[in-house]
Image (cartoon, rainbow, N blue to C red; front, side, top):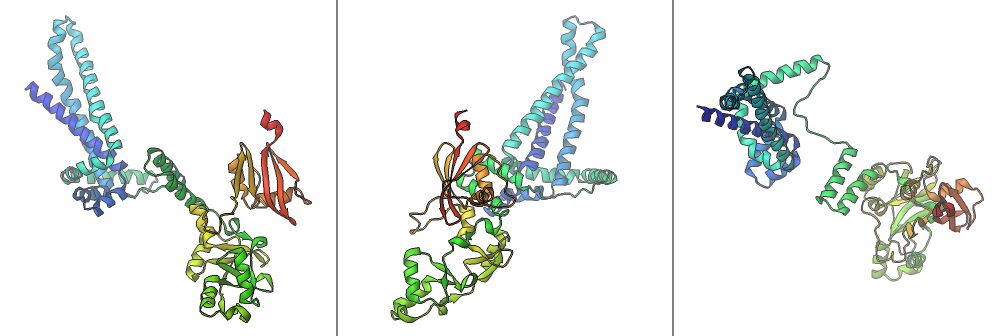
Length: 437
């Protein structure tokens, strides 16, 4: 009889481990992973999907199982172990008045130890580490147990909802777990550390988050750097321009850059020139002018991209608040925000926006955003009025000249190159006193 009771205790602790592992694995497993397994033809995954699709019901089943088993263990454990300890305590000459107390304490400690360690903590840790495998293993038994316990779990769930509603909470069951952007960033960082994703994948996804927060003027080619052609230009003039600039598309103006009327694709022009060489002599570029879209410079990047996709165009003109041309933006500019700088065979002499010369010593393109400079140097240049480091320098000194230096916090910002009043490159280095300290 004693052996049977001990066997029942072992089975109860094992059943408790089953319910604990089931509970933690159900909470931990990713629904998307189960969907993937179903698509791959995993037969166990279908049962797992059924369980996690009714999470509220099955969690109630596991919790009810754990509670009932704990009560039974408490009821059965102490009398069973008393039969074992009583003779030992008598042999040790423990006073009769203390035998019951000592037996109770020993029985309680032993049952609690095995119940907590073997029946809860160990299965919990295993379930957290291998949630997917555990769910696939316990899904079918849980479905069977849930059917048997359904009247009890249904009653308990209804009662709990009444209580939570009375406390002012409208609880919705079986909601899919969602994550905020910051939580997703943390998950990505952990996945990178564990090797689940590589550095490039991590960078791309993080860039997508940043992409959603940027506006068009932050990545545009500014008006001063836009190379345009006039609608009255001849094809021969266009070809000479293309030989030096090597762009595929050119904005077409009618008078000046504030009146961009379209965009010209060199592929169309060169294709016709190959089949009809006489076009180079007197023909104008007007037949090759395609429509171009105009958007305000403060439009979010994703809005510009959606408009480009809708209108089947690769270039857009950005307008400032007065209706003048602020610059242009291309599909390539937008893609570079996600995948990084894209260089073609004509970009061999292109200079990176940020050149590292030495420790805390950089040469920056004046178009680099202030927020990127702040991240690079761990400083806090205000960007309320202007977006770029070149624009910020102009706000610090109205008569800025090449060679002028503007100090900020522990850095010196020196104008390395200018074109008229337009800053081209900025040299950044630590102040002498900051570098020596």
